[in-house]
Amino acid sequence: MKPIVKSSATLFRLFGIDIKLHFSWWFIFVLLAWSLSGSYFPQILPNLNPYLYWGMGIAAALLLFLSVILHELSHSLVARAKKIKVESITLFFFGGVAGISDEDLKPGEELQMALAGPLFSLLLGGVFYALTVLNGNLILTTITRYLSQLNFTLAIFNLIPGFPLDGGRAFRAILFWHYKDLRKATYIASLGGKFLAGMLFFLGILGMFSGLGNGLWFILLGGFLYFLAGMSYEQVVVKQVLSAIPVSARVVSKSLVLPAEMRFSDFVKKHSSSEQDAFLVKGKNFWGILDSNNTEPLSASQQEKISVGQVAIPLSTIKTLMLDDTAYTAFKYFQEYNVGLLPVMEKGKIKGIVKRTAVMHHLRWGMKFGIR
Ligand code: ZN
Image (cartoon, rainbow, N blue to C red; front, top):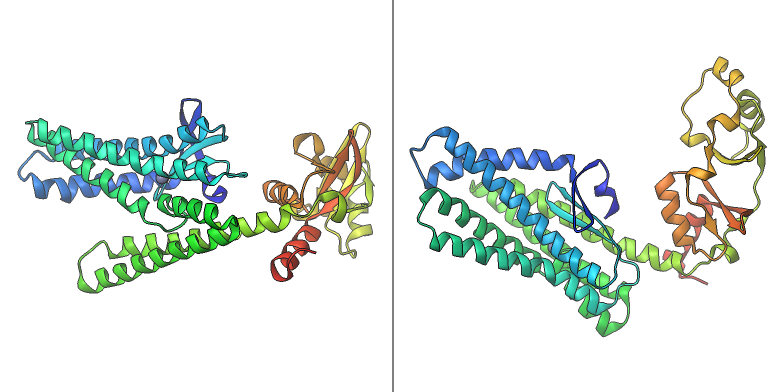
């Protein structure tokens, strides 16, 4: 789920894993602390000092935030134990996402990884429940009761077999083990996700019309889950189609090479009528990519002063392709760098280029007609 992970700041590191905060989390944190201190806690424990409600609200929201980190961390530590790369944990609007690499996961590994989070949330719910029962302080028990309820809710909601929720991942792992076909398994599990999304949506509409509140949240969550279920399945299909195409055999072509010292105005004059947007640029000890889609607008006088080498992205700053890479690797780099072409290297030399349009063509045809 890479797109969500952008616009985040790293908070701290835990067990060597970056814990990041997406800006949307602040919105939900303030909203939660506000609704807890403004209405939830005053309803349960009336006639307290308003500052105390705020203290309770902020404490409960922070502890909930910690609960979500621990949930994601338990996924991550199981992954780590299986020697699977864990990049980071990001907290955002609807909870947390662990950036765990999904390259060639085995069904058994995915099953254990998926179940670790909800099981830990169940455990946390139990701990907060025990604290509620054992503690005599009314203020503390109000907070711990709320946290035990939320951790139990988190565990149960995540165990619903709708992909990409944890339960859906576990479901997919079992289907994958049974069918030996990841695409089919993901397809069925993501239908579960879409069904759940539809249910949430329906409950949301029902809630709105009956005036029972929370309806909007259900609608938002349903919409979000529907989007995620569709996207997750598409990612698997894209990966399957493009992983079957080696860069060497199908996608490499030759490219026009621009000299780095060429004036930008000359470049525009010469190439404005061609259909090509991206070019390789060669200078003294320098290779780069010039992509007109990636270049800021330049005035006529700027174009006279500047050379194509000054505008090009140096190859030393990006990852390049190898002959034995697949079109899927190319696809990922194209997304990462947003360029129209990437060079293919062999023993430090450029063997040719891969055009983004060529990869997208293979993807469209592969999805429609299968790979030949
Ligand atoms: Zn989880």
